[in-house]
Amino acid sequence: MATNSSESPLFADIPERVSAFRQAIRRWYRRQARDLPWREDSDPYKVWISETMLQQTQVATVLDYFQRFIARFPDVQTLAAAEESEVLRAWEGLGYYRRARQIHRAAQIIVDDFDGKIPDTYEALVSLPGVGRYTAGAILSIAFGQPVPILEANTRRLYARLMG
Image (cartoon, rainbow, N blue to C red; front, side, top):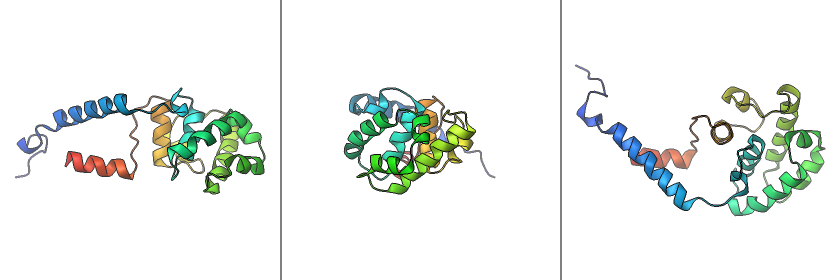
């Protein structure tokens, strides 16, 4: 006879293990968190730009680019109104220029279709060019305080190892 996993002694301690794991991750973050400019506030635009820049690019490289990019394009309206060539010049050196083209196009869509506001739903975010599950989760969690998981491949592997 099949038994409900929540009734099985094998799974009895899972809620406690999950709670302990969450607490350990939060303690670690408080000790190890770096002072990064995109963590200074929860502006959805800055979260989106930083998460896009950080795709396949090291934090040390992104730091200078992020500051300059935000200085040149301080909001989604300014980015949307810019010429693509100007956006590409500001991106120059970061590589993966497709990301720059995608954020430029996404900024235009945000201005045209979302009244210039970064969407606050998963469905709307992933409809934008260059915004996938991870970036959408980061924006919703960091900028909008929604309890949305932010799981990339390394995090999934870590959880799988720790949680069995």
